[in-house]
Length: 168
Image (cartoon, rainbow, N blue to C red; front, side, top):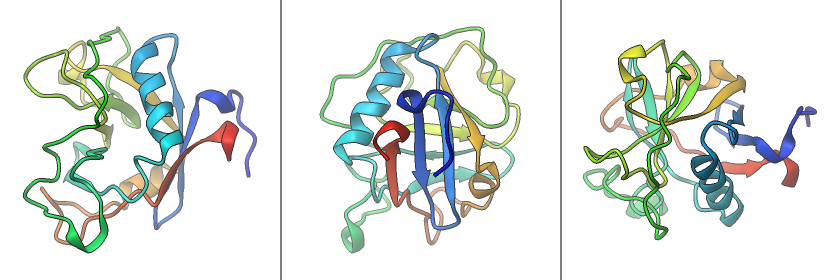
């Protein structure tokens, strides 16, 4: 296992293609960073699909309510849920939505982020100051680039496991 500068704030997302390392930004978005670690430590993200993957834009996942559960997955519901935890208030910042940044997915309400997140395939600055940025891919972006496209993809990729590097 690689050494990370801040393993307590590094998330390891195991995909079929390989492991993606994400450095969280607790100084910029403390509540979102803490939520991701909490759900990772509960195993809530394990097996969850990427339900919305748009070429040149982003890959979205994290629906722990409707995004997993093996063969019983209903792709019509994937992306409509969150977790049993309360929604998070927006933590907008000056951090741009550059390629490889992790953003909090939400509804029209800026304070509705919960468990879902997206990873930007490209610079998506039109999202700046409208969605919370709370992490950045520091290794394995080539594995993110290989995620199956679609809304939802015909055969969606899954996060096999999501762990805090300090616990790995």
